Length: 102
Image (tube, helix red, strand yellow):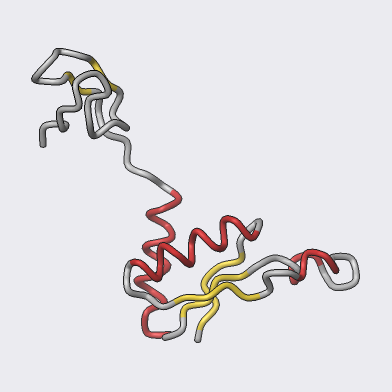
């Protein structure tokens, strides 16, 4: 086991662990409920931490977490079916339902 990263809150830690598990890097969140005793222990020790179960997966798992923090931005596009303009985040036309061209 190897600790990858400390998350600012439980929601983000859980999302990171879910993404790692989905990618084939078994991961768990530890220190889930220590925030209630922050002050009794150092604050940085009360935050949830994401751990990968196999230390050999750590470099690839960290690369995945880095990629999640820096999403790639796609350019705007125009639907070939109806001509509607879309920002890059959409992969399907909201007007007619056509898929974004590759």
